Image 1 (cartoon, rainbow, N blue to C red):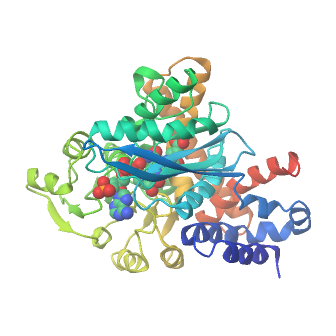
Image 2 (cartoon, rainbow, N blue to C red; image 1 turned 180 degrees about the horizontal axis):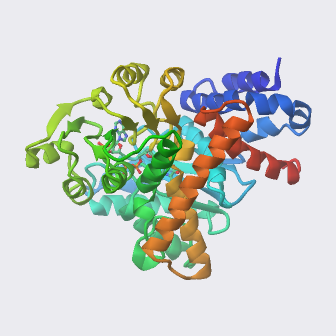
Image 3 (cartoon, protein in one colour; image 1 turned 135 degrees about the horizontal axis):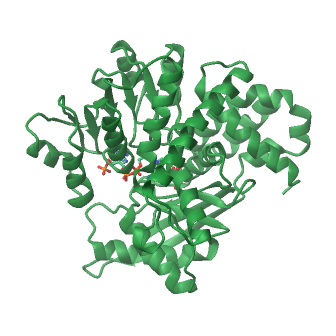
Length: 444
Ligand code: NDP
Ligand code: 2IT
């Protein structure tokens, strides 16, 4: 049995109850097969691939908190410190009722390769909690965040592990988490990114994931002789990534006509009104029905279906496995040119294979949404030198990083015989740097 197959079957045996983690590791290992085969003896000798798929550390903890009525609740907290070969652990915190170890491990595993692709010195990690911030008061969210940090602070630090936001964790949550870290440790340090601008945050971090997604999409299309300007875009999600993807798409002359949340989706043939979307989601924290109520051109549809809208480019920006094989078939039937993932693993394994087989230009999240964490790393740099860069400076760096990521993965795909397969290119390019650093540091 090949080394790749041995590790895949070990993973399947040991993680039978973790489907998302198995999906993420399978996608990566399948596309690394050629590289692993070529270095089999060396990798086997140091158990390099087993080490790559095994987190360095997994922290599971209880998060007790009291709601506004005095009722006590308990949630499950997680931090998976996956790989520190190229830098301190770096990756977001997700607060969503669906959070479990499988989801945090898949996200942490993907983060290793994504962070490597940025070219910056950051290792891979992820954390979160099965807490649902929807419908909670600010005071409840604050008490929850304080309790979460009261346990997490033991394991993180500016040079150890630097969490940030993800689903359900935005500026408000990062603020409460930071305040509690500072209170307990007495340290005013860059232990979290995505901080507010008055206490060490970086300009452009809020926009970075969505903006970065568009910078990369534009470069990828350009290298295929296609202009983003004038194209119709389908975007899913209505959170941080989706909102700023829509904003940048419009600035670049494209027309995003959809967005979605967990209850339904909007089709707005005149193009999404970003100011209204921000008002509904960032200020009122309301449902998309509110958007439809205030926008005559918008149609609201209950449930799923956002990928049934005809488009040139689809940008899934909500959550894992939201774009199914059925959606992929609809997109292809409707003549889609490109799919770039703003979310982490939003396309199922089968849907990805279908899109690639049908020659759709496809860039996975590890590359396409790397702008968020890249800008987090820029926030860490600013914190270390106790300086703040201008919006333009950070945005220019972000643009350069995304353009580089595309060319690096494109080159890697060509070099290893997968020209045009950007999934393989990204996985290989991300892996090689981490593998080299792991090799140099011995069996740790
Ligand atoms: P937000 O919490 O800001 O927004 C998430 C959006 O997705 C909301 O509209 C939410 O709807 C929707 N959503 C979440 N879960 C589900 C679900 N199970 N079914 C349907 N809709 C859902 O998160 P972000 O925008 O930050 O994150 C979106 C994706 O991007 C995630 O995959 C995340 O991991 C990834 N990502 C985020 C980065 C960042 O910097 N924030 C960086 C790189 C990737 P509702 O409000 O109704 O729940
Ligand atoms: O998935 C991701 O890359 C993020 N949620 C951002 C992580 C970060 O540390 O900025």
